[in-house]
Image 1 (cartoon, rainbow, N blue to C red):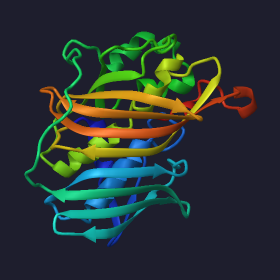
Image 2 (spheres, rainbow, N blue to C red):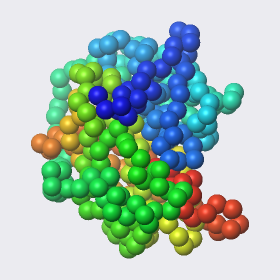
Image 3 (cartoon, one colour):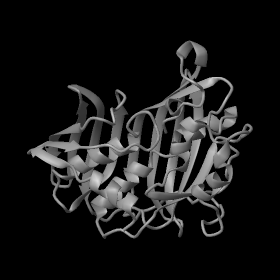
Length: 304
């Protein structure tokens, strides 16, 4: 197992403090606060710890309330809202320094037969001949501002291969659509709950940034400062998934207005099977960097 993927898996194994209370740590991925996908995945893991094994998550809805402190543990309190004949519902509150920083509601379902249809996967190039982000960043690493270098060049537990890479220094104005192939860097155990947690983790990457594409922001270097923070996150898991196989993460942003951007995405297997759908809204606020005392290259300006 690759050490960085193994570390992420261990990060999802929360310490049980009491029957419905768990504690987790955080990892610095180069942003100025706890990565939102980590909190989503840990909250889902806490909820899973109170669910019978045969029931797996089919949907979750989350709100980000406050910035997470990477130096302090996060406490997850689970409310066992309902256990019915087929469905179970859990509510989870993540707490730091005595205040909630995140809320999640998740629903779990035992497998049943039913109707079956899905959207068609976009017709894009497969992952085999595409360069991954590490290769793309290595070419420009000497040009990347110091405050962004760790975020853009650090090893990840997932490999990302964009279908149409963007020039992050001069992206131009692009359609609000993005396609990237994603896969865990190593093979993983046959554990539905683990794969769902890891899917929740990686679903927070590269989603809200789709809202920037029509406005000439690849990654917001230079020019006017732009502040981005996730407000909410929703994930629907339609079918069994394995995140150690290539998944196409296809996203679009149908709207940006009132200092908010909205993006939605879908995960497809290579054979075209639709695995999951995602939606997220975030704050996208143009800032005067001098007034805010936040330089345009600071990682706080782009957190998703």
